[in-house]
Image (cartoon, rainbow, N blue to C red):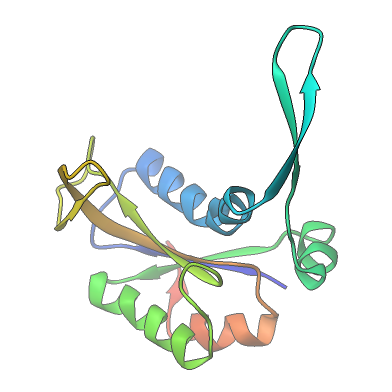
Length: 155
């Protein structure tokens, strides 16, 4: 198994920004599982902090083949936004679902990047953002290859 991440090359992100965006893409499937996890209350610890125990669902194939395995990641480059979105189309044609199997990573444009689009948050405030990466949950190599063969390794 491998986790595939595709980052846009045309944004000319600096090394730190690129690392942060790829890290967001790598963590997206795990953080989604944590956010959707079931928790139970276990009481206060000695310092007065409330503790919770979280039960996170990780499919057995991912746990055995990736988390307990080599933890392999492949980072590829997309020439631009259009090419990055082609990875989304390929993924959907393979039956993968956004928000479960892959995640579009958008930067809030607070530092290096200029916004390409806008969104309205839960408070009704409008913010700018830019699509930087697509990150996949760990996939069987055969499936990851069907997506990544259209892209080169990030250089």
